[in-house]
Amino acid sequence: MDLKQFASALNQISEEKGISREKVLETIEMALAAAYKKEYGEKGQIVRAKFDPKTGDVEFFQIKIVVDESMLKPEDEEETSVKEVEGEEKKIRFNEERHIMIEEAKKAKKDAIIGDELEFPLETHEDFGRIAAQTAKQVIIQRIREAEREAVWNEYKDKEGELVSGIIQRIESNNIFIDLGKTVAIFPREEQVLSEKYFVGSRMKFYILTVNSDPKGPGIVLSRSHPKMISRLFELEVPEIGSGTVEIKAIAREAGNRTKIAVFSNEEGIDPVGSCVGQKGTRVTAVISELGNEKIDIIEWSEDSEIFVSNAMSPAKVTKIEIMPHRHTARVYVPEDQLSLAIGKAGQNVRLAAKLTGWKIDVAGATMTAENVKGGVGLEELEGVGEKTAQTLRDAGFKTPEDIANATIDDLMKVEGVGEKIAEKILESAKKLCG
Image (cartoon, rainbow, N blue to C red):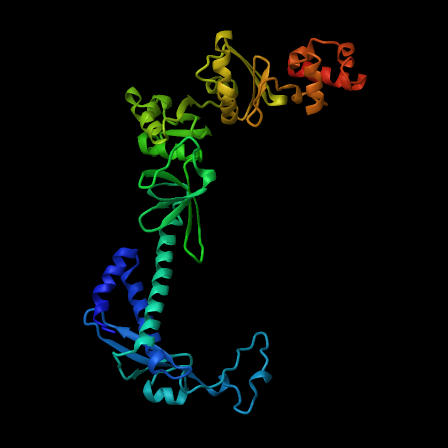
């Protein structure tokens, strides 16, 4: 083994793997010590190597630990007969290859104390042989990998929730692997955007979802569907958000289709919506472009629930709004020609508005919630009405809570399975819901 080759390899490994030069040097010394002990060492011996990267020279030392009589097991005592007692130090069996008595240690080092490690030079050998060289190689590879994992972990452990740029390295069934430069991260199926197409070699931005420590290497999980990716992209494009002048208060996202964000200005005179849109829409366009043309509605946040819900229904214009705190429901009225715009395709607009505001939103008699948006829902909101009863009521012609509120108990009792007490409870609940 040509030891002088290590000098040039030291800097190369440090630069390529992002590991400190000292860590690489420590790894090389451990490998050399392991190789020396494999070829020339004695059983129980502790060998330490000191490598000079400038000259390629190496020195080997035998390490002996300073002990005294109180630390040793009696020579005539069997190994298995000594039991550890809690709170007492474990006795050791003296081995002249790794221990030295305090009296002898003081001859080599006057100020030696119990527990010191003394170094004794060993004969230097540069030819380790094939087996020992293989041992050194294995130690170096293992230690370099460990140091590399540690370096990656230290770099990314505090970056959860941030954006990172990466190149798609390979695609395997449900997972995509992203080259981040110093490591490879995983981009799982559930964090991908269904409408996006991914190709090997493409560079994209990703949201760092989690960073986990793992024996096989740091597990970095990326996302492009997470709502917070939107806020991170706006932080890059809108200086006012980066400085804290404008704040993103809430985000509701259906990745790949549409997103609503609520923004607020912490300074008078600063238009939060205008700041995010940018001159001629340049800022929001940059975000939309990064997201594959996902639509983004930017609305102004307000502490006033009526104003906030009304803003959240954009692009539809709300003419009137009624807040029902006891049901945590907001009923909004829009011009008839804007009803479909207010509800949105498959209920998307009102669904996102509900997610954004946290309120159940009732548009023209169809109650829309963050969890359940489909035509004709709303009867399930009534007290005593389950899914089966709601369907029975619809089949009988009671499509909305308003239909029930305008009915009589006798009308409801004609519905199969609805008795007088249930009819009274349903009617009372409908009248409360409808104000």
